[in-house]
Length: 129
Image 1 (cartoon, rainbow, N blue to C red):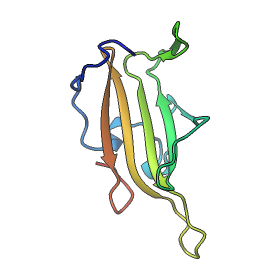
Image 2 (image 1 turned 120 degrees about the vertical axis):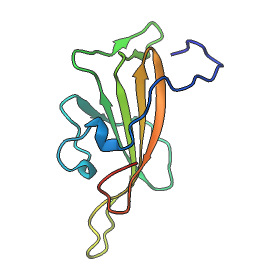
Image 3 (image 1 turned 135 degrees about the vertical axis):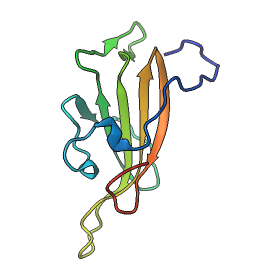
């Protein structure tokens, strides 16, 4: 939103140490399967990011709804989390069939403010910190 435009706001939450602490994905976290509150989406015009692919998911709080505002942009309820994971897709080489997860960025909406954090995936590809 444009409230306080031109000013830098400090995070108004304490971020958790591990991505898995948010319970955003079900099953094996590296599979990036959203929980029941998450909806995957694609952008019509995505930016180039060094040949990485991206998985984007919006998680609305239970009972929460996005609302269109007068300027046509969505307004999100508090508790919304937007996650974007950057990864290299599987290679075609023999024996290399899994994606390589790099980082997951979270935007968390609280008290009308967006808070941002980046989680880096470990070498084992089973957690991001």
